[in-house]
View (cartoon, helix red, strand yellow):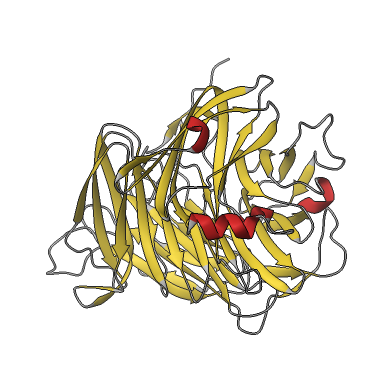
Length: 476
């Protein structure tokens, strides 16, 4: 017997919300961010090689679809060729899921992205997040719970099976015991639950969370925001980073003028206005980590040579100060497993609104990964290649579902490449790309700029597994 291939599910975080009242661990109350806040979801579902599209829809949990995507084979008399079904800038007011049925026993290739932007209020800024497939084990890094910083973890169970979730926390210092009420959390089928991390880990400049579930898999995300007095310091949506390994790569870290950035970070309350990498070591042994930073023109030297000792069971911050302004990738190796992320602030005035991007370590780009790019602002796909050489093939997908002439990049090892995203392709609005990488490992993220200092980063996540059905042997 065999278990048939399941639906392809991408869970999209909902709009950023303000906490009401004193932050507590669970069941927080929220209010809208501002009257100008807008949240939308863009998504792409690919056909098979003959142009047959699966049944697919974008819908809130347990609610009718906001957008049902066209399905079926190509019209009669049309040449059979790959195409796509597209959700373009669908306004949302809650978290949603893009679900696609399998085609001929093969999981559908799909991708989606949430985009939040507010031009006023305490959550002024830009936040984007790649909609993630649910999982039973995931790591989120880059949160903070010091004064003026608020972290809200949301767990979503899009399955029909209850999920029991354990949270494991890592902070600036190793924990002697697990925070209370962090184990055995229940998330009902077709529902979500939010938890304020400030109640679990108060006063931490760097927080990482491991989310493990039994029963149904969950999708996890963190809404991270900063408020300095009455001045907005930015908002971001954190999704899962690459699982712990002895090598990690963070691609798409944008640095500002080093002198001005250093002066701003020296002011009280602006300590996190400096760019930095966060290294989380979950094991019992310290990690000796070698960091390499490389931009478009190759490697740049970190002060001190880039070798740091990261404490076991804790998060260690490594500043990226003194480097010239530009877009970089960071590759890190160690003698024990770790995971990583990076913080990249934007804005150099202490009196005006700022924003920040949180970039997670990602898995290497594979074959036919779907990358929606959203709409509005300036967008760039940033690609980091640590070693060797990688060939990148990016097939543009327009909002009408057509696939256009590929863009190719040949990226040398130890460099960062940038693909500027146009508004249109062959006269049609651009929805995203189908991205493939060959030869040596390449890693990537989508960097988006909005009005003023608004900035955000979304990790490029792996595509759905291409296996058909899961064989199951029953023996006695």
